[in-house]
Length: 81
Length: 276
Ligand SMILES: Nc1nc2c(ncn2[C@@H]2O[C@H](COP(=O)(O)OP(=O)(O)OP(=O)(O)O)[C@@H](O)[C@H]2O)c(=O)[nH]1
Ligand SMILES: [Mg+2]
Image (cartoon, rainbow over all chains, first blue to last red; front, side, top):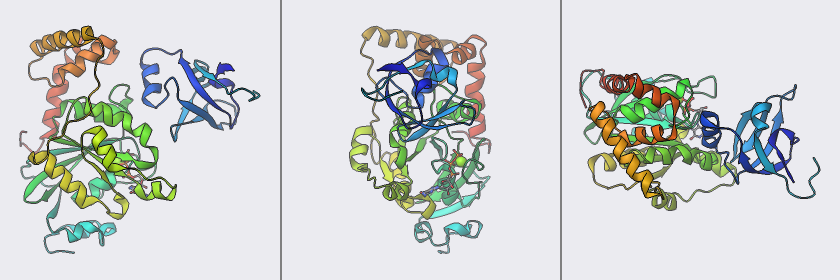
């Protein structure tokens, strides 16, 4: 199922399908290991729900909701959102 | 402890580490005398760069988790097998491309400070993420040694890294180590010595541009940058950033600070008056 990173819940794992960001912000995410095909899971959500820490390639990546919304992912079938 | 280790008492944490048995090493702390080999210590944040730096120089640069984050550059010296080295401990950085303010210091030094060799300290438990910077550095220089640190942590997590295979893949020496215990430090020094003396020839993995037109554009642009900023190094890297539309590099080229940047980095690298 296709969705965006900001809609995942804690513990869910998905695969990146597209980065809608551009320029320096896109480059930064790629440098942090977030590329098309990368597996991402939700590690921790801050009390107010923003920002969220994601687990990427054994490291943590903290994203604001607005950024996470621009990261398109694919959730495996049967994983309820 | 060996008699030659004149400054070991400034580093009590290393009192029983391998280094002190390696009488080939003399920690020189901050040494105002001339240096032969400028060695940059780079890597992602929190991988043990300052720990390596302290072990080799006998200095006590603050080490720590997050609170001990390095935000500026420090220099120290040591002598190994009768050759003198100046070690430059850099702030952690994930990339040479998308940098935050702290990371600019590291990037500018790696690109324009003309280190003779760069030791890239990587976290064995987060190898994939760490290799991004290693590969970026390999695009600008072959004179690289990869210090595969935190091997103890990796082992605790049931991870074993095949460092020989990684050495072949990267084309530069990969030295497994646990810097906090001093394990692997002699091997690191040996690798640095071999790379800088030319005893081994490294051939770092380079990214191939599939499209020949990119290659031509880079070459043409690099030539023009050389013409405009004589003495500036890594013009191909700069050309690629311009083609990408990197705003900070565009600015540096447009307003001429690119030339100053290079000079500044080199002057800082030889602040003891010794030119490289
Ligand atoms: N377990 C383990 N911990 C280590 C090792 N090397 C360093 N550390 C610890 O990792 C933490 C960070 O070490 P530093 O040397 O400050 O790392 P750094 O790369 O200089 O960090 P920044 O300058 O902030 O990027 C410290 O708590 C060290 O004691 C190691 O080999 N094994
Ligand atoms: Mg440090």
